[in-house]
Image (cartoon, rainbow, N blue to C red):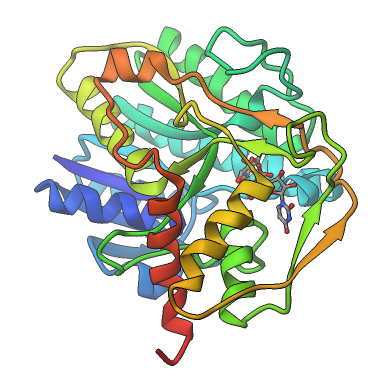
Length: 330
Ligand SMILES: O=c1ccn([C@@H]2O[C@H](COP(=O)(O)OP(=O)(O)O[C@H]3O[C@H](CO)[C@H](O)[C@H](O)[C@H]3O)[C@@H](O)[C@H]2O)c(=O)[nH]1
């Protein structure tokens, strides 16, 4: 297969490109390297640019006959989306429309879209399955839900087949240590704790201990990047093989929640093996954080035959720590 991976130099996209190449597929990466890194684009052919550039998209689709497109490029900071919704609707919705319209014009029918648990908003029940109401509470979640709805209409009108994969908490790193998480700024819990352990950051702050959970800290469903990527590959295959058609959507998580406190304790245990420790500070709640977010991913397991390999948080943290350790002089 020849696959276009948009945002293929970012955290999730770069792992996806490696997995596609290792599975014997050819990949063209489109990335403007604003959040992606040249160093992360070590597989596939890199084209620098973004989805706002429709002339570039036309050129790419004229040059290559893609079997499918995977779209990872998005702005994804909840807080920023409240301050600057225009950026989110333009980047995540308008630019995605540019891509979809080029696909339709060139008859490319298979599309895999990075969606998010944020499309559900405040959970009415957990674990969250696909039947859960989607009522996003921030522009980031709303922008992703808009694309989910657009994809349904594009299937009905233009026969575009798509799979939306709603990530819970993506984490971990390439088990071979070649790729990992490098957001700037970093906002995600596991890399922040690891940076506190490696000395790149002074401390980690717990955002609230007064949630209605066992230890008072928020619970999340941490899903290894490799498992996320394997679901994408299965999703693409189910479309290209003609097994499934339509505008599909699946929730992706392990179905097991860990509290912030449990994550900190797991990291402490892993980094202690290298003689490292960290300073934990107490903070107040972060606006917009639900107490518990856990996925019911039964549909993905049954429909795509998806079998995540890394349900154990310690292994996830070990892979992320191996990546973080390149900043230490070990
Ligand atoms: O310094 C920190 C950072 C995070 N947390 C806590 O750790 C948990 C996880 O926070 P992350 O920021 O790592 O992840 P989120 O659950 O907020 O974010 C996830 O869900 C979001 C939508 O809800 C977006 O999709 C985002 O990209 C995805 O990682 C939350 O309870 C948060 O309050 C802290 O206590 N301290």
